[in-house]
Length: 483
Image (cartoon, rainbow, N blue to C red; front, side, top):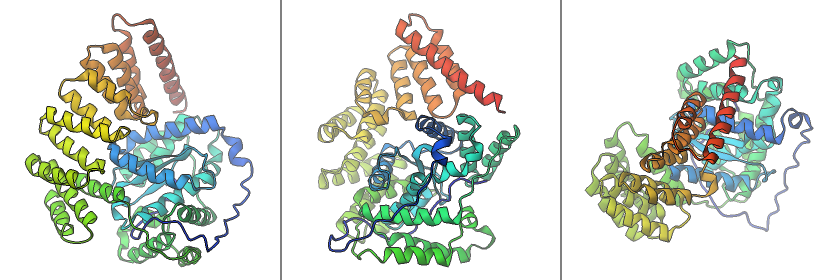
């Protein structure tokens, strides 16, 4: 059993629209028919995707780093806006796993492993993977493959999909989850045909090119993957076993890429900074990470050397060497005053060294310069809570854009704020939402019941707690009935 055929990435380049002198014929997409649309309504699809994402939190580590999340969302939106169905809702996220993987789940939820991002050598390679997965969504491949499961409830199918996904990365966890589901004779197979893969390559390349990424990144990746697969022997990764790269696939994508004019596609600074951060947070050996960035700091452009220094600063911060980290980030913030990542890193260093007054001044200055930056707001909220300023933390957190207010970290921070403000009913309420967003409905029910036991609850809060308790209980009942 497996999820969507994922596409891996390795190395190439980004940006700049194709010249208007050359007209590229837009691919005539096939008539998909009504089958997929008939088995699931738009409302069900939304619920299905949300349930899948919640279940995934229980089986994989989803990045809660706002900078990383914002980057993958931005590149995903850029691609999705040039897909054949730009109005389709999409949600992009990073799974903190060293395995090379990416996948498209229900409801437009597209995940990319940190291992894949680190393996790419250029932003266009990462974009080619994501464009391929977007094509799986727009062509309705997932729903057509699970049509036989249409009689199952949304929570059950979502849990099964999450288990299938994690089974390709952590076999023990995946097998345990699948055995629990199959114990109730609930099982289905997700198979993607060669036609689906070919179509995703074809439609994905069109999206890639129209989004100002290098279309040659896709065949270049396939060629590297094909060459590297010869050296794995019995230890070949799951992706290569289930999704072999054929000569025909390489030739087909190369031929399509050659239609587009050649040019240079420089990587964005955001891509370079996210790769540097991921390299540090996933490093098993910080000494090796420091050596890596020290070597990079002596080569490349001034921007690339700055990114290397940023990586060195992150290593210093992780090793609690605050003075050294502060010096690096201070220099970077002065040299690149329009780059929020450097200013945020400087403020984070002050906060983690318990200099909350300095951190507050830096975050306030960053907010004045970048008023809509979600990373600055989340990190400032955390710093304010550490410094005992819950009321100001509440103001900052509630100023987040709406699309950030359904993340587990948002509910977790709200719960902490209300606990510090001595409002236990609200604290338990938002702790419940945190657990639910993280896929733990049983713990969410416990927290709602704790909230209902508090004194002096307002009529409005009592009504909210009753509604959420009934909702959580109903979902758990549906799940139990199918076990």
